[in-house]
Amino acid sequence: MNKSELNGSPHNMQQNYQDAMAMVRKFGKPDIFLTFTCNPSWFEVLNCMEGVQLPEDRPDIIIRVFNMKLKELLEGICKHGIFGTVLTYIYVIEFQKRDLPHAYILLTLDSESKIRTKDDIDKFVSGELPDPCTDLRLLQIVTKCMVHGPCGTININSPCMRDGQCCKSFPKQFKDDTEENVNGYPIYRRRATEPVQVGKYSIDNRWVVPYNPWLLKKLI
Image (cartoon, rainbow, N blue to C red; front, side):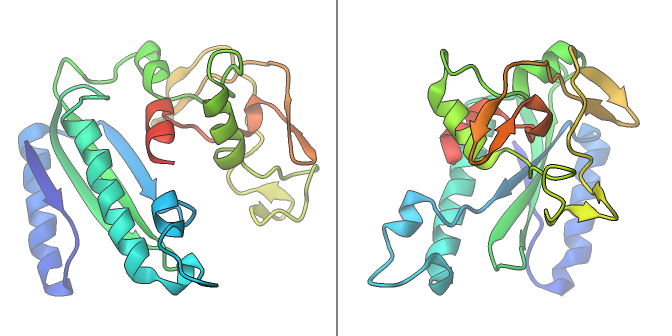
């Protein structure tokens, strides 16, 4: 297993870049781009708060828990093969405006594990609300954490709105099947189904941010 952790002081950035490019030359272009974001409501974070403390008061706890969760994520990907066999991975850790860390991860898979067809995409990524009869917990997580907005005519004051349009192009269009490569990106399956109530809004598959079910349940 080859890995590269792209962080550290500025004078190391050139070496980090060269290491990453060497891995791409040897193993090929990455197959999966994964974003892992810190959740300040993780139980491990909240359990360490004392008195009236809030998570933003304890960046030391935030960093420790994030690092623990990141290691757990990489172990699930690399040792347990949830995406198949990983040849190499590269990640960089950055901080959001709210001082929460997040990691950008690139994974390169072996030839037997590469994602080539729309069925391969559907196996790992969903853009739909889960069936409450088969996985109620996943539905609860998706409706809590993976619903965009709503925005547009439903909520013109949403932060994503730019000149009357959603800058993230929501709501998406209903689609019966995934398309593999549209301008370099997949368009995920979003079938027309009965909406569910999320807060004061009625939500259907057009508002779902794509997710991996295993990762969502494992690390939320």
